[in-house]
Length: 133
Image 1 (tube, rainbow, N blue to C red):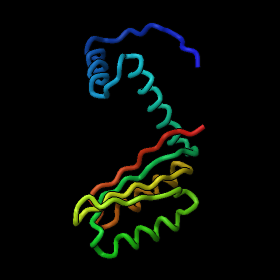
Image 2: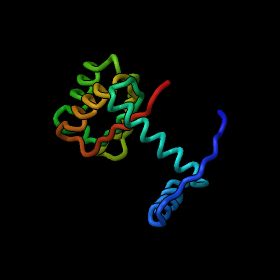
Image 3: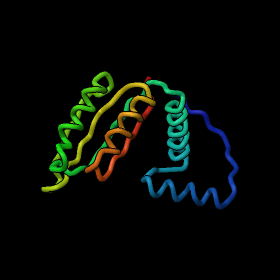
């Protein structure tokens, strides 16, 4: 992929925030930061347009609460056309960390993630999506 150079003028406060973004994300320079921010923005736009995206749903939950693993598996089965795989890790006696790989229309993935995150016993949930092809 060829690289095109261009100049950008920013207010000092905004430039300082960009430099802080570079540091916090361990990027090597401002160009990488701008590329990442543009990519993230375009990916988000793609999600809003309900395009096909890939993603991961991460969940932390109490596996001993209300047959939660069984109910979560039932919901994933309902969405088997978008669920690629899942893996669970016990991070303590009362906490399980699950990662679910998904691919499909962004609205369907968001709906699935919302159903799983909203279950009683789930203490944390997050959906990360990225554009495909």
